Image (cartoon, rainbow over all chains, first blue to last red; front, side, top):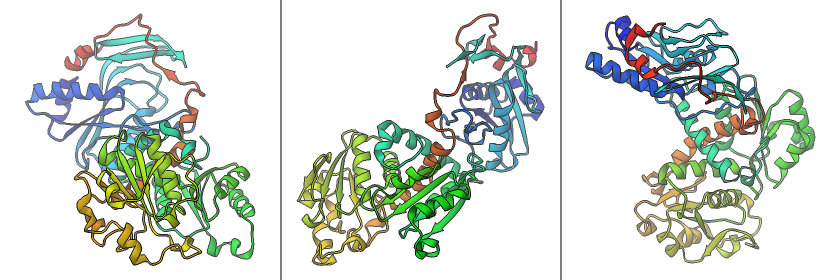
Length: 155
Length: 337
């Protein structure tokens, strides 16, 4: 995936790799490490919590995990959003919205470890680790050691 | 939680939750565009029956940064001056479609009354001598930012304890989080009874200052003093004020807090507010973040929703597919299946 990112952007010059809280943060770090190995230069890394931009506030509990950490100005940069699982696309929609609070990036790209389908919005990932066909009511759990597929538990 | 009327409504866990959330809203306030759409479509009305600049503008700013609409009912220009009752004023404003009232009133308990009449959420922005919970929350947030932990810390509150709603809320909040509170005041400005107050009382200002991690100064509220409780402001400044000379008594790490507005030269020495150990500017800045947190908890997805609605969480039960994600992250496009 890191190679694809380098290829697409002709290097890592203006890159900011942004992990989405919480699942994407650790993978953003791993991607940055991989990019550093390839290019010899470590791109900037950040984290973004999209809670306040979500469209389901008031419908289910939406509380942020941690404050976002991003460069002050993203204007002109290429932002690579990283998340563990791409599902309905609603988190990514919120993230696209949130990123613009920090300026006007030259481009925003999306990298996901698993694309499980069932999109509810016109959103597509640029870099996909694995396409994983799922049923809507299944749950996908991605960790750094692997991906698990199980049935949904309602709490 | 529907209303925020006293610090006890929150409890220690609630206070910690507000502080944690406030940290996220501080980050929001530092963005190029310091505004999030979280409370779009909600309306917050400020209902102030007492003068205030910082608290009202702070709540208004907080609401606006959350994309809520604000309505400002200033009593001097409202029908209250024509004799309308508190209840009718609240119901009239609510009829226009309000999700939260921010109420300040010179009578203790007024926000509780409003809360019993309206369907909207009510936030107490100061009622008489009773409570001012959001002030205590922003003070706790500032305290934590500066000193880290509350456990075992000593807070010395100096000034007009008797008439101070800030003192009541702050004592409740600081002690809930594990700090020890000492109060110092002229005898005429002590509450008639301290039964049930979780505080130590000191008479020697200088000794109290030496042991303080936080010095919390209260404003001399001349507007609440109907009788002659103080011989003169100069005498108060001399005996109880944190003068430039008294600063030498403080421990190096001790901070000086004041809820504002300050009377320089009375409770606080002329140049003390400009020192690094003074937190007044941070308190104001943190006030916006904390009020965003409170509004968000009451009107957005608050903790009360937790557990009540069906929350989909990833199941841990593993079967069917196992993909090595770390290999995926490192190993480029090969992983396309």
